[in-house]
Amino acid sequence: MFLKQSYNKSTGKTQLSLVQGYRQDGKVKHKVIENLGFLHDLQKQYDDPVAHFKQVAKEKPANENVLNTLELDLCTQLPDNTCSRRNLGYAVPKAVYSKLGLRDFFQSRQRSLNIGFNLNSIFSLLTFNRFLFPSSKMKAFGTRNRFFDRYDFSLDDLYRSLDYFAKYSDEIQSFLNERASAFVPRNNELGYYDVTNYYFGVPYEDDDDFDNDGNKVKKLSRKRGPSKEHRKDPIVQMGLLMDSHGIPMAFNTFSGNESEKKSLLPTIRRVKADYSLERIIVVADRGLNTSDNTAFLSGVNANDEKNRDGYVYGQSVLGADKAFKKWVLSQEDYQTTKEKDKDGQVVFFKHKSRIYAKKVTLNNPEGKRNLTMNIYQRQMVYYSGKYAKKQRHEREKAIAKAKDLIKNPTRYTKATSYGAAAYINNISFSKSTGEIVDGKDLSINGNKIAEEAKYDGYYSIVTSEKDLSDKEIRDIYKGLWEIGESFKIIKSEFKARPAFVHTPAHIEAHFLICFVTLLLMRMLGYMTEKKHSVKQIRDSLCNYSCSHIAQNYYLFDYRDDVLKTMEQTFGFDFSKKTMSQAEIKKILQYQK
Image 1 (cartoon, rainbow, N blue to C red):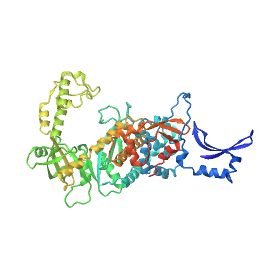
Image 2 (cartoon, helix red, strand yellow; image 1 turned 180 degrees about the vertical axis):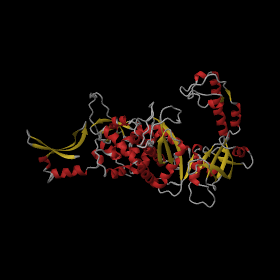
Image 3 (cartoon, helix red, strand yellow; image 1 turned 135 degrees about the vertical axis):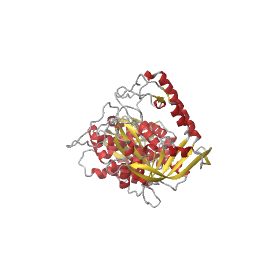
Image 4 (spheres, rainbow, N blue to C red; image 1 turned 60 degrees about the horizontal axis):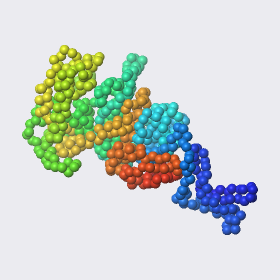
């Protein structure tokens, strides 16, 4: 607000008024808040009315600086191709982004770069857009005006910035891990790791590169591999390491045709070095339970060994050796303890464990797999009636599908027979078409069904931590569901696939943005004590949008319990139906 002096030539008088400035359609306009009178009349009351009212305008409280009424022209028509609606829900992920200090990180790196665009501005847009309105990079740029922040860069700038994000990927992960640890009490000794993959919606694989000696150059490539969604599209794989709160610590990417079992060790090496961790216990499912991973982490694990890393792995009962299976089925040494589940219902935990020297085979220095060693581990097995019922139900569905396949083989291919083919004798598929080969006598494999049924309900976990109780082992392993949930969030809520980037650097940058977006969501869940689901949070913040009505004022039309939680967490006020642009900017300048 300021004092305006208006001189009227016809009367020769100067009018004083308090005026509020605002911007509309990119132009500065003024609104008279109060007419004070003519200067010569005011001179009778004040020694220096101009100086007096300038001070009044300066000292006027902010709440008095807001108009009580707005003048609207009810006949005003919208210009063609107009959208004056903007989102303010992104203030919440932006507040978490601010807490983590990412702006400071990018500013410190940009000082040594000779580039004409702001890395933080681009990264924040891509992150907030992925959080609320997941889309391609091009669409994120095209719809950037839905946010109040000014994103002053070109589409070419956006794509060029992806190379820098990929370059700083490991540094950003390390920086965010340190910053997150300042807000969340972490047990950095415990890390949950799993792998998934993402398709790109292209029919071709990336070409391989070779050096001058004809050796293949290792690079991140879209390649066909074992898709988690059973698709034939080329994929890229992502390994994710999380803490016990479900908050991401690090990620790595690798080509679709590489074994996920080999992805764990490079990640652990990097995290230990970059995060200055002395020891880490890796929690992973049975797909990563390999001799190499086990031996690398814990070594022999004899009683006199100190400071080796550890593991808690799922162990396949059906895929184990005969001696292990015999031990599982033997009812000797099982204990049954009474517990209460998360719903307060009484359940029974039937379990047993043992310390066992497991013989594993490793590669020798020449690369031949003939080196054997014994690794000491605690092996725990438990029985769950609920799990047994689930296994029987899933198998019965697969058997029903197998029977239909035998009757109607032309209706199925290798892809569509997934889950059923394992129960059929003599089935094979054409390598070129995926169709079932004719002329084979197809029948149900009754022996396989009977063998599987013996182990219904049994689940095994193995660990290097020999002093843990059976309950502690099970409870630690249960935390692995959080990482599966995180992959669902990235794929379903943040729509990380199909991805629309193709160079190795841009692919890495894409998954870095997804990683940071997931981190913001998980941090937000921790800060709000998980009162709301991810979907509830996203739906609420997407809906918390407004429309421009006049001058610098916006009209809001949405409020729910999620917004109330965010108000309590961050000190925002989302209750106002009308807000000025100044009030909105104050919310977006959250610095706590």
